[in-house]
Image (cartoon, rainbow, N blue to C red):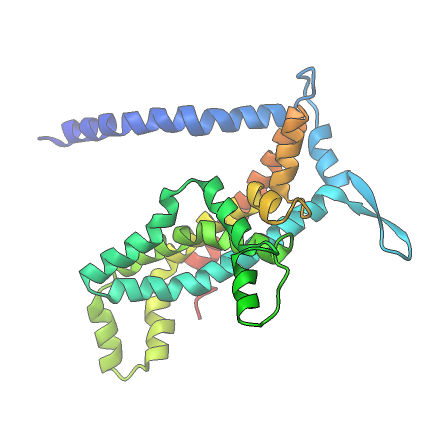
Length: 289
């Protein structure tokens, strides 16, 4: 088989995916951008974009009435909760991924199944399950009361929203890191140990740099859906914490499609910029200790 024939076969193999990507990824993004930069009459405008940065609302803090940038505040709240959830997933998922990668094949299969089982259930069912667990008369408070430890109020707080995010997106952190760690050459770790490198230094100088691609993928797969989620905040937060996903969903429900598209477009641009920045820092090894 000559080189030209091989290239043609490879091109034909990629054609179905290229068509799928164009129809279900590129075309929707084009429509989002089109709606974001047009008004109700589909005339070109920057009003939707500027509204995101300039819209204000009044807040009474008991001493004075302050004007705050509504959607910027909502975005920063969403970013804060998403970052907290991502960090927690990373702190829990990285050791678990390492244990799985170094475990026997049977143990790996068991741990993988345990991680994947929650993903087999519907997202809404998982969220409702946590409502049952965290509410004031739920399972958690029933156990605490039985142990005479008192009750805790979690449902309707930011803590409940973070718990829901961590639970729902935790597998997306573990799996990419595990897939990279499972392919690490064990001889590199043995060589580092033979040369007198302590276990902590092996982790910091060998394992961590080599696993960064998986970490970056995991952070991306957790951070992005955490920022844009709305159902978790509505149910576990009792609607008290208006996140950027809630803003998009609310505008869409109110039939303000153009402004909803503008919010989604700005969010997409910000996330793409952040991901590119992290990628560059990773490539330059600035974040590698």
